[in-house]
Length: 134
Image 1: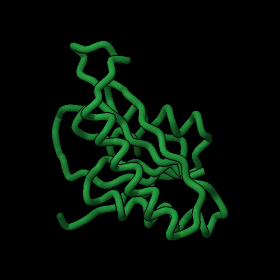
Image 2: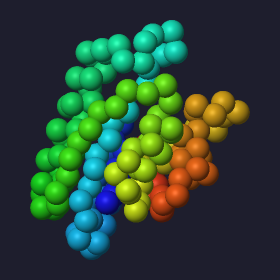
Image 3: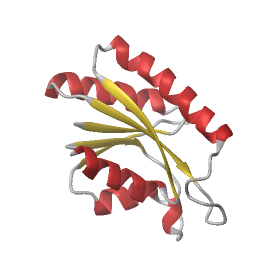
């Protein structure tokens, strides 16, 4: 199983294309994940309609990309305090062999700014990072 992280950015298409090609090669399915980070001041399960709509739009755009490759995919939206831990939790829940995400160029002392670093340092599976020049 491949876990592809969708963020609503321009890099999503690269992530989806990479995931699709790998899935075809591995004869695997792709689980698409969009994470809504919920501020600590709010209840974790509080509905965030605007963010949910962004996630649904991002996932439907990427599911179109996936269908061109004729790869089975399933999209999910999760709410969490920190995307990194949600990604790791989801990868374990679905038994992911590989996580594919867009490389973030954020360099910060704040753990919450370094999702890619957090995922690569703490996962039990392979990680592929897609980078764009934007």
